[in-house]
Image (cartoon, rainbow, N blue to C red; front, side, top):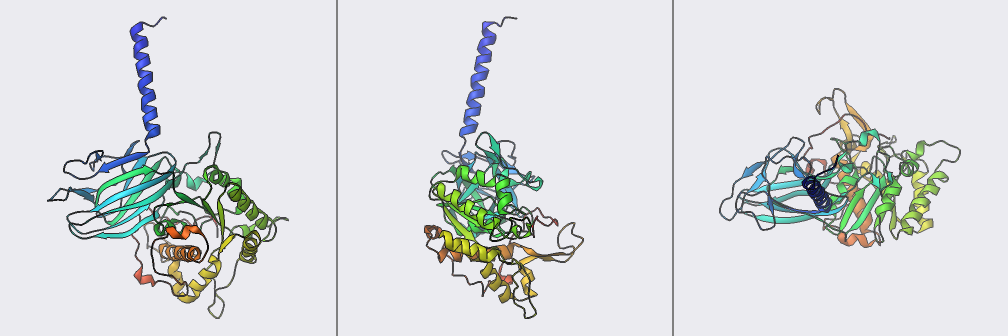
Length: 438
């Protein structure tokens, strides 16, 4: 059947418009949102609280905020008395997020990104005051180029670290007047390769140092946490996570490597701290250097285990010693987290050290009918203290990365922050399921 000229013209226009739409979506790497109620700033898009996320941007996961109208010089803003999420569909890459905080009333804003990465901590404004603050969020996807893909675990399906959007979680008593998101290609990216003591844990009360460390860096550095629970050096490679890192890492970037807890359980004839563990570490180091990146070895966190005298016992065998030996032989910067965590637990004491781990009586969280007693995995307080240990390790090194650290007091794991001085706004999701690995 022959098409008429008008039908062909309509088909051509449809094809062109579809191409324009696809091109526009592919190029959407910057946004400017105004949450106020007065005249919208030039170049900004006004966002009302009924704008839910569908495929571009909006409030997400059934959460929303309330509008505080403009008053005097204040243009209005949004706030909430419970956590809310805002998501934006963006391609893979590093994004500079700039928030305009403050308004008529005093505010206190904590921001987490993706799977509970701590980006901003308790930023305060006084009544009538506004502040502009910026941070860098890394967005990644499972695809490796156009022909391959990371082999995700079932527990990672639906994880915010691997989806098609940048998600921000706002906590405390926030006041958000405006938000700017811009793709930036000039950041140093710090890639994290590790297990459950490093990963971005999705659910309360679980946490790891990798999701706390972004809070301690200024713009100029992006943290790309590729760690996953239960992994070894071998399974990190086997699931193509190292390939994924190598597909985007560039000269001047960093690769922090922490494994040992799960490698320790491999019992093949070629396994062991001075066999497969050593050789695989050298593979990670060699591949990073081949890309012009800088490898850093982090020794495994100590488990919570004490002797009769109340001193931390090494339950990791020769694995921490092997990591130290590799760092010395390969002339790689070493952050001895194993030694620092032992000092941390010793300083807290046998019973008080439970406060750094997932130790909670039954019924602390919804649906938790049994006590949680885990001596490997950390809660937010423990993860935050470990991130401070990593910061001190960077400060003590020759890494140029240290110039991007925020100005915070020196931290000594032998004199940790008091547990009662730490506060963490709980995210809505919680789980009683222990992460893979031990």
